[in-house]
Every structure is written in structure tokens, then in C-alpha cells.
Length: 176
Image (cartoon, rainbow, N blue to C red; front, side, top):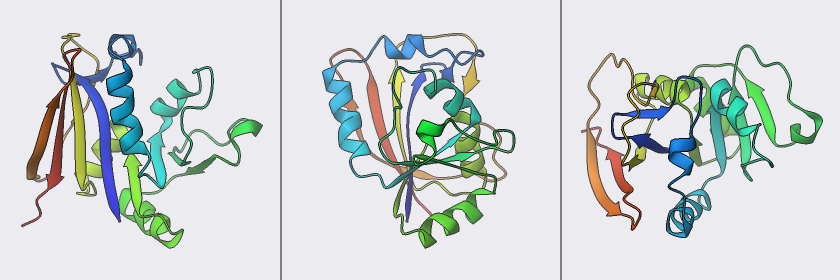
């Protein structure tokens, strides 16, 4: 099983403003960026998100994800009827969740959302990180990274620069 982060961040390391606003990120969308995301998402079996990400994407005009979504939350108890087949709510630690997903037959997992990403990293449950830096400083917000009990070493695979100034870097966990 492979777990991957695919996320955009400001130059100062934030994935959203404190109120969850990502307009500064959305302003950089173009076909080149969309194609890159579509290439990534086409290889994904299932997606793991947290409450914050769920509460953001539920405000979009249509449901954002095509794959099965596992919502990690101890506070959300149900989803709207139109999402019942698409979203399963669970509350378990990352390792337990990954075992559950493996038993369900999933092999390529997209981990999305600040707190969920931080939790998976704390338990060393991330295999790849694809981080796109947006050429904006937003000063404060929700950080991509948080406390880690141990250092985690990643190997740089490649960096791609988009015509609109975004810089996407791909890293793979080096567990040597």
C-alpha cells in the first residue's frame, strides 16, 4: 500500500488561512496545474480527509472527489444523503485505518488535509509527498507540518516549475 500527500502550500508553509480560506491558492489554477492533478488522482483508489477538509469541499458547487472518501472525524456523525455512498466516516489512528483500507482492497491512498497529514506523518505513515508551492506569503494560517516525534527522511525525486510560477516537488520516504 502506498500513501501520498498531494497538496499546495504558500511560500511560508500554510495550506489555508486560519478560517480555512484557500482563495489565494485557487487563484493559481490553470490547465497545466489541473492536468498535473488529474494525472495524480487517476492512480488513486481511496482518499482520506479530516473534518476541516470535508467542511471546505462540501461548500464546493459539486462533490470534489470521484474516489471513495474516508472521513476521519470523531465529531461528524453523518453526511448528506447524496454522499452516503461516497463518504465513510471513521475514527481511528492512521495505522489502524491503513490496515482497514488494505483489507478493503485499496492500494493507493491520497491523504489530504492539515491535521490528517500531520497525524499520518507523526506515525510515519506517509510514503510520498507531492507539494506544490504557491508564490504567495500569507503570513499566518493552517500549517502543513507540525510536531514529529522523530525525524523523517525523504528523497527528492523531481521538481517541476509551472508557467504560472507554481513549483511542484515530489519526495519519496527513505526508510533506510
